[in-house]
Length: 255
Ligand SMILES: Nc1ncnc2c1ncn2[C@@H]1O[C@H](COP(=O)(O)OP(=O)(O)OP(=O)(O)O)[C@@H](O)[C@H]1O
Ligand SMILES: [Mg+2]
Image (cartoon, rainbow, N blue to C red; front, top):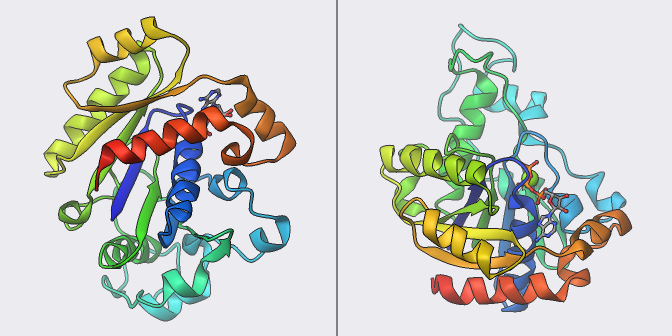
């Protein structure tokens, strides 16, 4: 099962991804969580201790590995390099595990806005496609606003893309843009998740202004979420209301 999580900055993508990862482990599933945000923070949300995090390195920063596999030094453009490097061993070799959740960090690629392809971008692109062929596990992708990582080659494999929104017009506007981008590449299994919802009025607002997408569920605004962050405890452990809401959400997904 492959689930991508996206949405405007700060809406709660990482919080939701971490909650879902732990809920799926509880349900007896194998889970691979992939941090595809250029500034990764899923490890923190999952409560990975420092000694395990020290072993976690973003794939895009593994210069030697990238050179070995693509035949070119990262940071170079022009020259020749493999567009389809070997990546099948990477998820297992470079992920770390804590409390049943395996975690992989993709890292960022600076293409200088030109959209041109460099060795590290070729590596990540191939890795994303490769992840789609993994079986017997739940794959959770914590992305940023957009579908950049999900090229046309991957859309058939994505069972659901969750677009997280807050009860604000701005986050709904971003959701609508993401929906259009997703539809452009043929990705259709899209769902809205309302986060930081305080009352029925806000539920009504999200339902009314949803960009014509099924609403999978709502997660309450809870000050204990920030407290969990301050204390360095996963939301899953510290905030029962969000854990319960995530369990309900997974039920509604019925994958
Ligand atoms: N249900 C909630 N109630 C209260 N605060 C929340 C809730 N969900 C998330 N937050 C807070 O909102 C902030 C953003 O959450 P999070 O990092 O999960 O969002 P994000 O979408 O991953 O952000 P980014 O775009 O920076 O990656 C955090 O400070 C988090 O503690
Ligand atoms: Mg995030």
